[in-house]
Length: 289
Image (cartoon, rainbow, N blue to C red; front, side):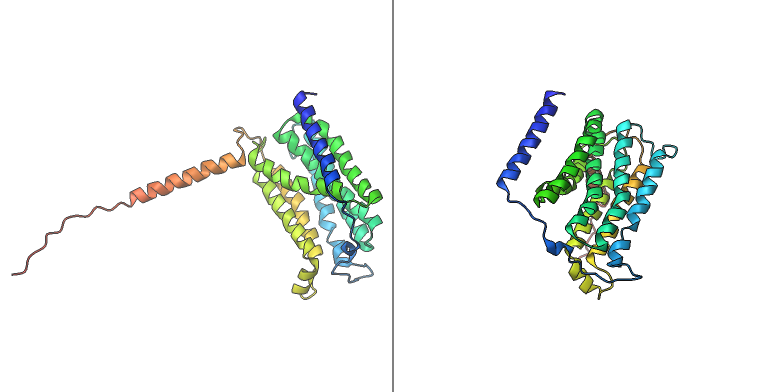
């Protein structure tokens, strides 16, 4: 292991330890389980919050099949295949874990809701390391990242402290869009990462506005149900990205690409202004007698 890698891991671990020392514990609020829409249909409690998880199962299974069926996604690296396999397994498992939780919301069932999501989050981080930083480092990081996610869930469950889980969930939300913009990609269609991140942020907003949205829609649908549907758009966009993308021959970051596009727009604007320059002719004025 190179000194730079050891240094990076050391800084990350030290930062985590300092954060745990200087910040207070974050217990799980029991109000979290009090969702706006608690209606029962067809004998299913909290039905809309339960059935709205079905899209995760569909897209997770589709992604898994396409990973291995004739290498439809054209995954050339072994680490990529492992990472995307873990991701789609996590996505499909969300359907079962979240449905199980919403049938009877409580802390013990919430573990099975959060565990599949954590698998998906940590897999995405490993995939990004493979594609944007280093293939070997990303491949080696898959298992440690998965274990870190699982440990964060266990830590919360046994010590009633959400801080490690919050890091596992929210750090990728910040780091992945930044890396997608700043780091040169291995493949085309990098903007799909930003679409996925945007839908996830929208899902978190809807989750926070669960009861207001339920009120605004006259008790038709709650924010948490919409949160499930928006969150399911994340793997949808990533699956579309995998299907459409190809190897990027000229590796340029999105930021660099945007700068080039903006420069061209400015240049074209200047040319348009120049093309509209006017020439005024002298018109003789006749003096009246």
